[in-house]
Image 1: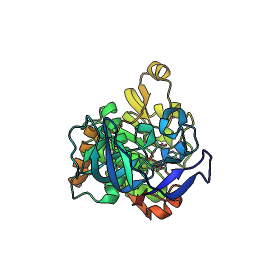
Image 2 (image 1 turned 180 degrees about the vertical axis):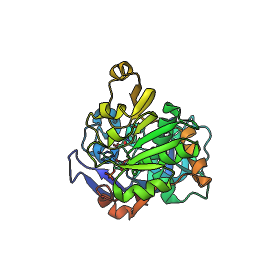
Image 3 (image 1 turned 60 degrees about the vertical axis):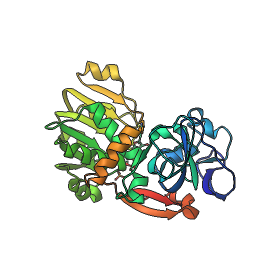
Image 4 (image 1 turned 90 degrees about the horizontal axis):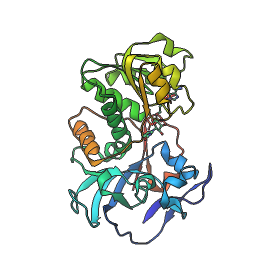
Length: 310
Ligand SMILES: NC(=O)c1ccc[n+]([C@@H]2O[C@H](COP(=O)([O-])OP(=O)(O)OC[C@H]3O[C@@H](n4cnc5c(N)ncnc54)[C@H](OP(=O)(O)O)[C@@H]3O)[C@@H](O)[C@H]2O)c1
């Protein structure tokens, strides 16, 4: 069995590729999956720093396998698993933060509730890249209740979550404006954004206003949520993926604002797969690494998702 493991909590040099043996037996509500590919999410290197160890019991004793997103085949069903069969092609989340054993491994234990059957016509690269980003985008649009005719501002429209949110919102008939780096502007327009603003411009927020909804899908953690709320109309709604807005302060300003903790449920995964199979949803894949070069994958700086094949 090949895997990429966190060997020690540290900011760098914390990953190691290893060959090891051992049989994982799925517990209640888990499935054992032969993983074909996984993808890197921004949370994966953060888990490896140890900053989230309190939320990830599987990292209590290192080494622990990194990665969460996966596509693969169900090998064994644990007790109390419904709706999945041995041999099913599936995708989902097996990260240690959601009760899995880590996906960058030939075999992974995944929570059955965060695993969904996958149509054959979605490629491994797409399937490996969609679980967390796709369900994050979908959950945010659900919370924002984005509907036909609404105006939505997506901050970070060139990123994985942002680009998927642009596509989902545009196909619901919303008018979508997004921010992106200039090199991503055409790409984001091609996904359905009617206008793209350069987020490197210091005061871009001042040029837009009166949105019904706002999704901050950028990887900016500092508290600039106040400035972003000024882009909403009265009664507008905002979701922040990487910052925690003050809900009471937002209410006092006449809008609503919440952070989000994504739950990559089977229902959401299935909805994402349905959109992808219909050709209405695709994620940009930046680079594909073999598991043996996967340590490099975890720190690669590319536009688009980084996929690791097993
Ligand atoms: N809360 C949750 O449950 C949850 C779930 C999923 C993701 N997330 C978080 O959501 C964020 C996005 O995830 P992702 O997978 O989409 O990451 P990603 O693919 O790396 O996308 C991040 C995007 O943010 C953009 N960005 C960087 N600086 C910006 C700025 N100052 N203003 C506006 N946009 C800026 C980047 O554009 P450039 O590189 O072109 O500057 C990039 O397109 C990450 O922080 C991730 O950890 C949270």
